Image (cartoon, rainbow, N blue to C red; front, top):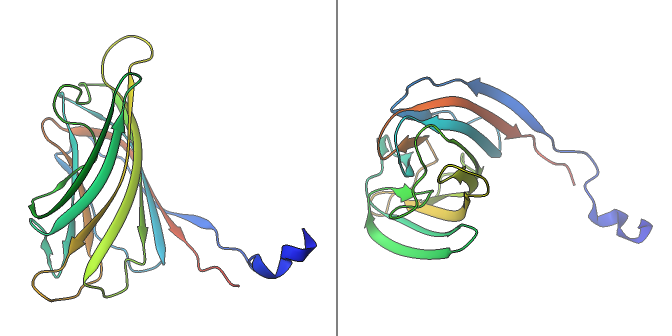
Length: 188
């Protein structure tokens, strides 16, 4: 592999644990500081008190955006695959998990990982990608997974850095642990 040495990073970047949150019966979980790192990874390990869909919003220019979301997601179970491609300026939020017949069941663990790239850059859109898994019913093997990407546009022709991320449930409250990691700059 010596012929590839010029392409590999000379000095490392490393994920640093920035913060741990332990919400208990929370209606929303908000992160409002994305200023110290170039990338953030947020890992949620939560239970909800009711059957629900996991949703999120992003904060730009001082307000939680209720329009201008566009996203693509793929949700799968052992028997079905639901590929959604939504490109709408009227979406009020983004569903990170399935809606309809197979939402996440109450008191079952769900795990999600969200990745934010360049949140401190002042841009006309901010983006996030995610992946997750949760139990949709009792018994063995009834797991569901989801992955996706989303953007939200600043109002009008404005620009903004990412000022916040809000995860919430369509019903019930959230309890569990949230780990927030920042990626230190990689030297090349």
